[in-house]
Length: 79
Image 1: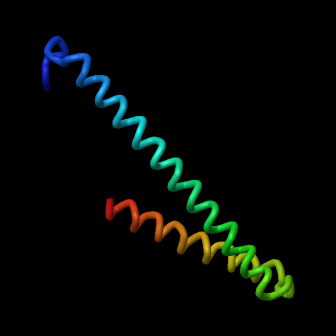
Image 2 (image 1 turned 90 degrees about the horizontal axis):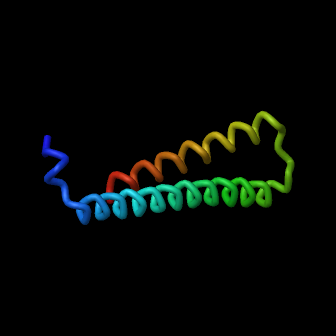
């Protein structure tokens, strides 16, 4: 572990900038996943014109959420 007296202020600021950039990127990824889930559920609603029961809608929502989470996880590993 490096001695804290040898750490330069510009190294600390570079690490803080990197951490801030990663946080923004992560927040954007979650927003994209949420947008995907909402739009997929809406498209499914338009496709069946609301003719499904509550249990079917619940199952459909969780399937869409599962695939959105999987896609989000796979895209994180590629970066």
